[in-house]
Length: 201
Image (cartoon, rainbow, N blue to C red; front, side, top):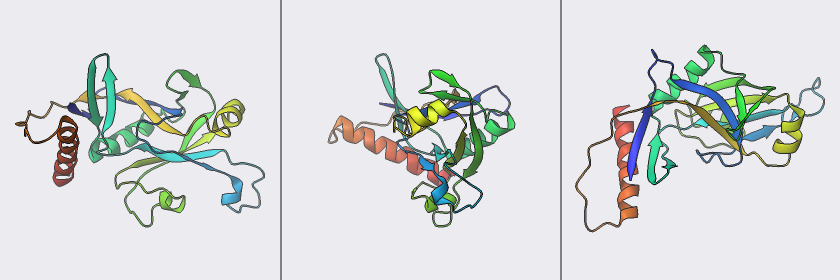
């Protein structure tokens, strides 16, 4: 199965256009719904309505299917960092959708950072164990319908980005080891790509 690295060209119009709240995030990381009880702030009454979670994880294979074509995509640490910066530089922090289908009002990215420390990162405080280089964000939900009917009921569980990326040239095909099953080869290929990316970055 093909494995394709998606990249950003800072000179082009490519990049992330919106953050979608979804039931099944492709990166398989749920967000944490922050409530006032978790921050003992006297002036806060009621829920803070903030969702925190991973927006993009580097080197994580994400399955894609386009008709009969099945493949994996992934993003390098460098691309994740560029994407996080360009999203804010292009003033996209108020762009959000529901399940990549419906544009939403009242959701804003209010915090954005890259995980640089597995022990002291803010995400650790909220029980997240994320790889170094992960883009994490906090989204403020000033939309009663989304908060009450989707967040509180668990209909949405995480973030998913939407945008435009370029494909990096595919890696050359390697000789097939007849002793491995198709699934083993696919898993090994993904592991090799991630190791190669970490060694080069």
